[in-house]
Image 1 (cartoon, rainbow, N blue to C red):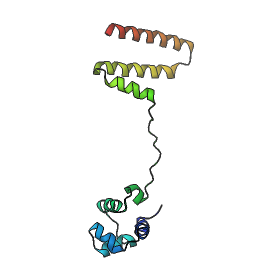
Image 2 (cartoon, rainbow, N blue to C red; image 1 turned 45 degrees about the vertical axis):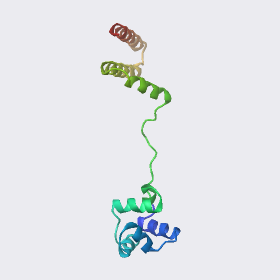
Image 3 (spheres, helix red, strand yellow; image 1 turned 90 degrees about the horizontal axis):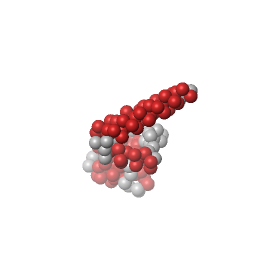
Image 4 (tube, rainbow, N blue to C red; image 1 turned 60 degrees about the vertical axis):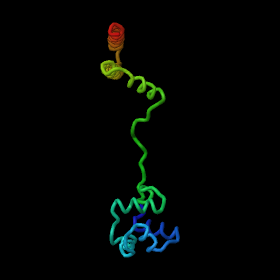
Length: 135
């Protein structure tokens, strides 16, 4: 990972600017900016944001922060459709569907024997019957 002071000097030199040019753009003295480049002083977050703006880059790019691949759940188009429809339901219906999906998920994990499958199927039929009477 490149150190911020090295990155600042590299960016300044790529733009063919003098330390005074960058200091003026930031509204600091040349010696303050020189301290950033030498590593004797670290720019605060506001100064880092201004530096990113001066160079036309992101704060991540300026600081060398690499965004890690997301381990969060990626929604399929089917899941997005489900959520869109779900959000249009009244709260009591949403709660019923949440409970039903939780039941299905648990039952799916437990389906290891024919007896469990039969109990699950009977429970699912019962849930569907209840939902028809509910409407």
